[in-house]
Image (cartoon, rainbow, N blue to C red):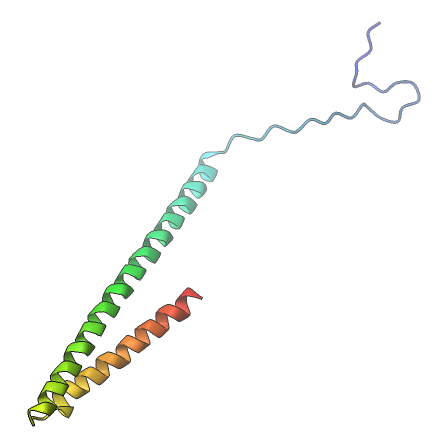
Length: 111
């Protein structure tokens, strides 16, 4: 008589223990859809992060140029005795404040 290796021997408490991993079940359609949606969401987040950085950089460059141009116009108007505070000075101050606010927001967001 041949003995089954899983059957207990005389005096054993239970069947022989095997270190067998249970087979992982095949993912169903619902699991595939969840995985696909998670991958798509991760790609969307990366794309949005990159486009946000590009938009912030372009905005900062534009505001820096407008600030520079308004300050240069204010200095030129002051040198020639024209009104330099209202049109160019105010524009330079507003653009400068917006530039500082944008840079502060970017630094705060990257932390």
